[in-house]
Image (cartoon, rainbow, N blue to C red):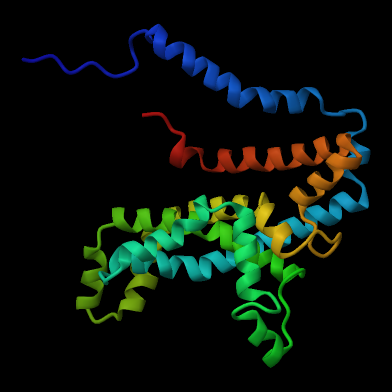
Length: 268
């Protein structure tokens, strides 16, 4: 009998790989440790209970949740289309859908202004026909956050759909179910974990969005000033408040990672 192949990772790491790996860990962890070390723990309760902080936090939670809902309504059907339907130009559509992942957020905000601004390609018609102005409003925050967050959900759901066996869907259609009924009753329960993971990622990305939001929606307290914008503003006037707000966002990020640990962080 041939012996089983050795499992990876059991031997010692070679020094040329170990040293850069350790430097990489320090590079990524040191700023977070510094944030904890420099945190004004004694004044933290006063900083976090101010009206401005709660106003920004509430607006961030509401807008991130609304942006995630928009991403779910639009992104899940889009992911199904990319995963299940063969059509000409599908690769181009996928590239365009994922473009906001690599697009600088400020550029995304400028693009939104050119499209939905008062003089934008679509925005001018929204303004003249319906009197609807989107930039520099709370709705504009939701749009900016959905623009940068939806690709995370689409990628997650599309990957889950490609891993799911399409024969269940086909069996449902042969039994008389429409394609939409098969998707709703068969496919959607199968891919629910992927949808949930994508929604969490989209929500976290929306919560931390800065560049597109400040460009498209501005920085008006109580209306468009979310937590990242409040951190930026506080950093110029009150660094301790900026650290406190940053710790809140850090805690949210850790909670998101903890929620996804069974999906992505379980070692085999």
